[in-house]
Image (cartoon, rainbow, N blue to C red; front, top):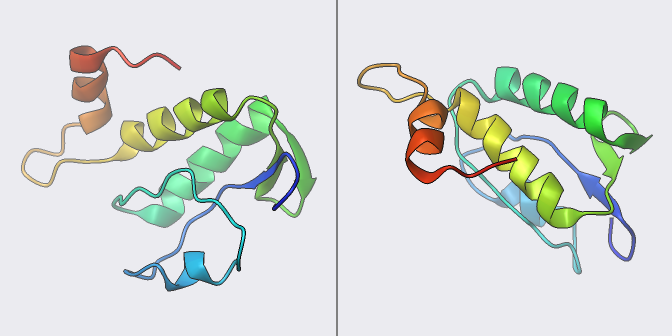
Length: 103
């Protein structure tokens, strides 16, 4: 939400950025990640954000004071469910073991 500390967390099943572009001028996009089974990952992501932030509109808009903390939470949560096509091992687990990106 432009000019506030309101942030939207959500997904699109479109394979382009047309959905993101629909939010209009002045909107900043902090992170866009590709993942398998986006509806499932979105449900898990929203659970995590509901546990950590006040929901201020609908089910996907949150009041966030610490942008870096929220971004870290977003990335870590999505990476937990990002699967490798070859062996279906959670990439998030291997990624965290290598890079120790704490959330």
